[in-house]
Length: 194
Image (cartoon, rainbow, N blue to C red):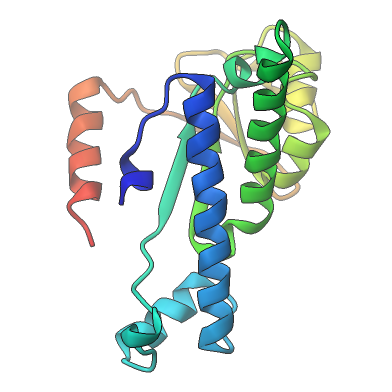
């Protein structure tokens, strides 16, 4: 419960939260393994609701967890300065890649956002492990290629115009503006669900 609602502002705190999510993911995989023939959280939760799993053996309903990293560049650019900062940055990147590779089946999803679409931030490992990507208007074709592996985002008109990529062909979408009170209402609605 604490993991799902925590907000980390400092890099060390973000590292701690991401490591905790990795531990939660490993625990969930162990529960899926113990439940037998449960390839993902959806199957596991259905078995739990059908009372085919035993809470006395540690089985529990597993809620979905969404980790949102806003301004991912801030976490990855900690590499300058002290060696401890570089280690934290490497640890953060390793946790993010691990969660992106294996988290979906365990019900842990990640959203990362950055306003700096540079190759040293959105690396090949990040692109390979995040199958869905969104690009708003960027200033150069190289930035579009970094985000989407193709040009196009540099030709968008702005004001919510975006390209959504999941699979082989991007889809052009107009994003709606959502203000802070609406975000609060959506967050409250989601947090009231089981």
